[in-house]
Length: 126
Image (cartoon, rainbow, N blue to C red; front, side, top):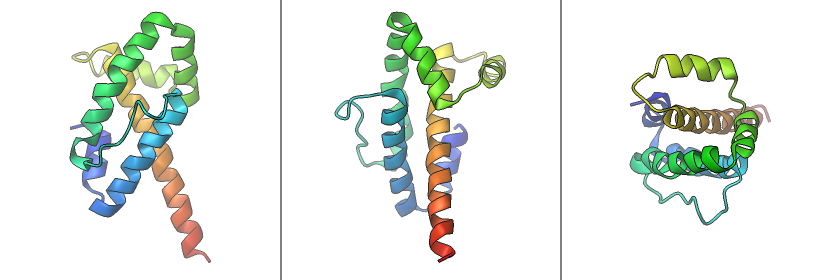
């Protein structure tokens, strides 16, 4: 289990569904995926695996056929070269594309959580 899965499992079920659905939307926006290609199936227990199974080959193909676009995605998602290199050093049993995929999913999750916390704070301060 990785960081994203662990955090999701600690979140109440109803909120978890909203977080996952928004994470899917964030990933579509960040990576530029057509709406029909990445759809949350509604099962929070398998959502992370669904993302991995879709994004890993998608990103692998992008690396192979459009490395400039891949570099733009990494920049847009805001994954630093230092963070990526550090993660790669500590994930020697994983492929490059698996590490990048996990980092992209985690960054989308972080963005969603930040937005949700900000919205909740705005509601509570009114």
